[in-house]
Length: 457
Image 1 (cartoon, rainbow, N blue to C red):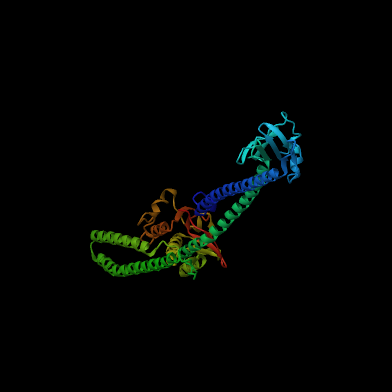
Image 2 (cartoon, rainbow, N blue to C red):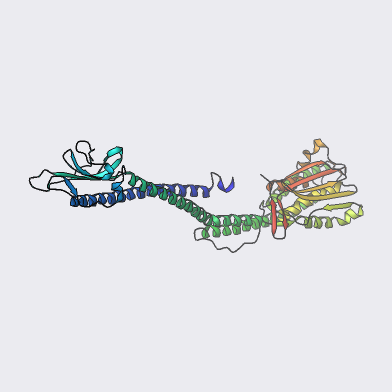
């Protein structure tokens, strides 16, 4: 799933921001709708009060006691039947006058507009219309009975306006929410880009590429500086280890040579004992020297074809004298990810083994496979029996005691390969001899583009 996996830091930040933005938008939406409802009801109630005052001013009783309306309330809806807009003047339960929307005012028959007395409230008006209204008790003369003036408007008007506003708010909130999520996604990706640059910096360190002068955010600059310092420290430790290994080899080489010379003058039994002990010392020394020489860090890109060419050139005189044919098929863009001396040590021992056992031809091929860089060295010698293919990697093992050597070459090859997570296999060659197949970290480098394939641990 990559970037969008559950463990992604970007996904966590976006989800957290989206949840909080969603909650904020929902709460703000409810607040906006609530405030708008209060605003509508306030205006609605204010209008009812104005209508009531107007009604009192235009609806007064005449000399015969009947209510005379000297004008009309503003708004044609008061004259539309069942519109919910209504006014009424009554004396107790007796309806004296009312709006056209309520029909003719027939005493004892007309329906009473039961608006709340003294304050605005909601009630069920005529024809079951949910209404919001207001009623006032007015005494026109001191001795006259009080008259009740009532006005009402349908609540549906508030609900209709509130519904339109709610839909507008929802659409606006959705657009705003999507915009916020997109903005958060963009900001998060932009903010996390330096982490990807930091990852590439570490990859360049591991592959041995030159450093690049990058500008880092203030929060990541100390990390980048520490990585540079760590790289310098590791390089110093590796060089120091290699130097100490070389010093040790030089210091031990001379005493071993002296012991070898002294063993020549000893009797046969003592000479054999001394030779075995000298071989053991050399094996122990070579094992630790091979490990110290191999840093195990893929800090260089080594040209595989050039390395093989140099090694074969060193063997050229002997191979020509024996009339051995050499076939090399290695793409020029193949690179080994590791230390150059390690590659020379590995291929040098493998080619030297082929040189010893071949009869007429040696073939060296290399390619990039799914498992990494593969180098295959085949010869037409006697080969290795299947039951001996594991034994040949044991330290000091020589299948033919007459062939010169200490039996350490392939052991050293395998130990260095293990440091790189690689492997070596022996099988039968189509040339008739042995086929040694090596797998190492590597890549194909074409110009400035490198297609990397590392061995999986």
